[in-house]
Image (cartoon, rainbow, N blue to C red; front, side, top):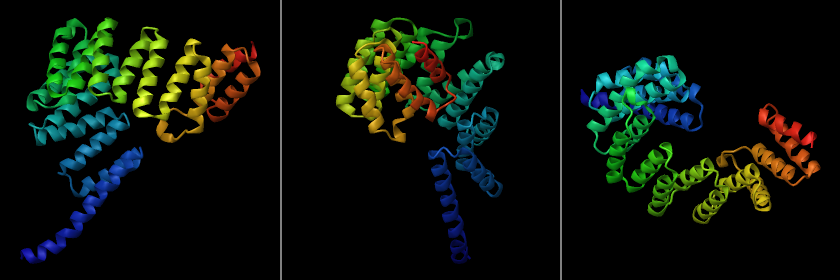
Length: 316
């Protein structure tokens, strides 16, 4: 009997895996609607597939369909209550719902906290759950359980699992608590330990918050030496334009960004043209500023910042 069953099952297994591969490609391409349709169709035939339920929940989350995502993750937790990642994802979408609906946020806090704590307890190596608890305890008011000491506790746990994550978590805590010198110290430690773009970006963001653009540009240049990413050229140009400093360097970097632009760089070329318009406005080059802001508006005509900037240039 088994000899006849196996050939019949093989096409179904192959077909199922093909559907998952296709759905994952759609998610990577950000075609979430088609991925949702594919998983819904698959689940009609395979309603107990935890893999499909999880992927559908993820797709709902990408589309900000929080209630639908919550429903899928609840199914997962009911099917396997000891899976840390299911609890983590459930807490995550509850948190996103709370951010978008402040009236319901208070009622969701208990569920968010319980889900992240459960995930951390189930998996002593779950980095994402500990990051979530670091942020949650810092952002919650004390009356709802917010606590810097609890946040630091999970930062310490993170540091044991990943030194870089621990340093970044401590940097986040001290930056959030308005202690920029301590935040700078830990972000620099993270750069020395790991040196990823995330580490550099955290330090750059701190310098922008503390209005230290020269330090920000220097840090971006250090990141460029290590990572050689075109997107970093835009960051230098942006800071130069916003703070009216190192304008020549900012202009050169923005032109390099535009010349080498690809979709993977993230920021549309229109924003680079907008920054060039700002730089030429600082230089009192009205004609050049108008040329660049018109290029920005041609690409993205409805961006209010571009429209406002053009009005400023016209009235120079």
